[in-house]
Structures are given as structure tokens and as C-alpha cells.
Length: 256
Image (cartoon, rainbow, N blue to C red):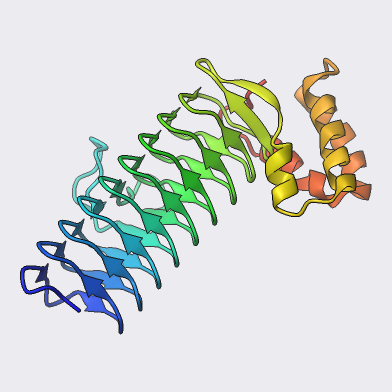
């Protein structure tokens, strides 16, 4: 399952069913889970842990040292979950000791061609990053978020679960859960209602989230006042709670 032209470091640990394509390089301190496919001309550097059932296409660079000028070669890691697809030319860098020392990608994510995942990014499950999108350091992305092509995400930004960013969005503030965002500068455009319907949210839950959006974005309230009202709404509709949490924990202020 390892092509004769591939180079695999003796310290790398490859589980059953791992395939490594022509001219790929698997470096020291790399662990790859069962049934993962590494295509041709892929470079994987360690320390990196890759889970089961992943597909990594040609010219991807996985687990390389980060571009942060503060990084001085400390033994940080990249951790990738299960069943992810990493397309051509994607770059994923290890973390820094200034954060948790890890860059993390969840399960079931799709990273399209030429996207970049910088140091200390934390990505949830079932995230889609479209072609050419660039994530700066320390960005956090919630489950089921979708980022359109050629988005630029400023360092330390947080993007909530089920959020949707249109192509070309430049983001410098946090995006609460469920929002649709577009533009440069980015602006909110309601809730990602079609995405929620596709994921099985009930009509009642979607109605509650519409109301929550209006509370924050249409009624002229302060964030503090809006959060107090949202807590009341969440008592009857728990789907509102992730929206509350993503606002309350915003590190750069929310997009409004």
C-alpha cells in the first residue's frame, strides 16, 4: 500500500489499510489511522496525528511548521480527525505554544483546493472550507459551518456552528452561530435557514431562531440587553442556546 517512490520515516506509525501514493513524504512522528489514503506528492510532517478514513490529495502540505514569527521550533502538533477530505494544495500548519500547542480539525470536514489552515485553528465537525479560503492563526470554527471561496478570516475570529460565509467575505469580527454573512467588509444577512432545514431543524426551531436574530439585529438593543432577552427565549427553545453562547464568548466582538 506504500508506493516504492514514497519516503516514510521509520518513526511514522501507519495503521492497517493506509495507502501512500507516489513521491509522497511521511515525516517523523506522524501517526496515520486505518484506511486513510495519501495521494501522490503529499508531504506530511510531524508531530501530526491523522485519524481514520481520510483522503489527502496531491500537493497538500500537512503538519508543517507554522509561519508565526514567534515560533521557534517547539514540539507542537496537528491533529486531524476521521473521514476528512483534504484537496489539492491545501496547507495545514501545526500550533504554537502561545495557544494550546495544537491545530485541530474535526471529523467529516471538506477542505477544498488551495485553502489554508494556520496555526492553532480549531475546526469542528462537518465544516466545509471552499477553494482559496485562508484561515489565520487561532481561528475557531463551529460544527457544520460553510465558508465560501476566497474568504479571508482574521486571526482569533470565531465562526459559530451552522454559519455560512459567502464567497469573498473578509471577516475581522466573530460570527454568531447560524448566521449568513457576506461582503468586504462583512455584513450579516439573516440566519442560514436553508442550511438548517437541510439538517433537520423543525419549523418551530427555525421560527425561534428568526425571532432570536431579530432580537439582536433588528430591535436596536445593546448586546447585553439582547442576551438577557435571548435567555428567556432559550428556556422554551434550546436551539437558541448556541446562538447565545457564540455571542457571549466572542473574543473580537460580534459582527453586527
